[in-house]
Structures are given as structure tokens and as C-alpha cells.
Image (cartoon, rainbow, N blue to C red):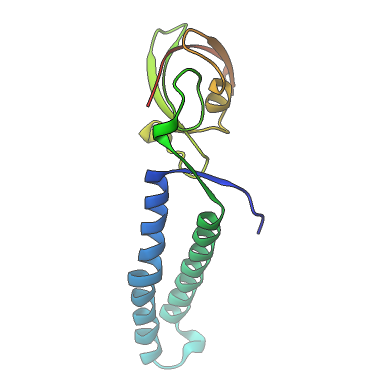
Length: 158
């Protein structure tokens, strides 16, 4: 597995740690109990409950390894030290679509934490990467599948 740097806010770090704790504790116990129950049915060669539980166990262990690697390579974005003069990681940005005048608020986060439904976009996304390094008042062009969209940066805040 590559040692790619994982950029996280404190909130993102906490979520990953909580997920890891759940998977290592409660989830492992649930799966172990399901395996135990499936073994009680007898012959495991044609036991779909056993096969399903073992597959779940493998997926759980894989996710645990993935989370541990991510946390090991995590770099924390200190939101208190975010510069609001230019758009950078951790910053919150209000942008306006030049054509429709519609406004959007986003927080620029690492790809691990990206959740567009919660207005958290990745620094690697088309909009996120186009915003980086720009100031309030700047106009940016973003290539999207439907063409090009122009946004104006209205505000940068924490």
C-alpha cells in the first residue's frame, strides 16, 4: 500500500478514529458471534451463513487495515491557522455562479473527508483545485462535464 499523505481536519480525524474503534470492537464481536452461530449449523462446506459471515469478517479486517494506514499517514489541517486571505485547505469559501447568480458555501478538505452533500469538497476535485490559491473577488473557470462554469469568490472564512 502506498504511503500517500492523508489530509484531515480534526473533525475528520475524530470520525476515522471512531469508525476504527467501532470496527475493532463492537463490529468484530458481532461478526464473531455470527460465525459461531453459523458453525452451529454443522457442515460448513454448504453453509451460506458461514460464508457470508466470513466475507463480512474479511471486509471488516480490510477496512481496519485501510483506516490504520490512513491514520498513520495523516496530516492534520489546523483550522485555527487557516489563512483567510487566499483559498487553501481547511478554508470555507462562498462562491457565486456568474451566470445564475446562485451562491454556494464549501469547505476545502482532503479527499478522504470529501462529502459534497455536506458542502465539503476535495482539494483534488475540479472546483476545489480551481479555487486553491485565489482571493476574494477573483473569478475562476471550472471545467465540468457539461462545459465551463465561472465562479466569483465572494468570501473566504474559517
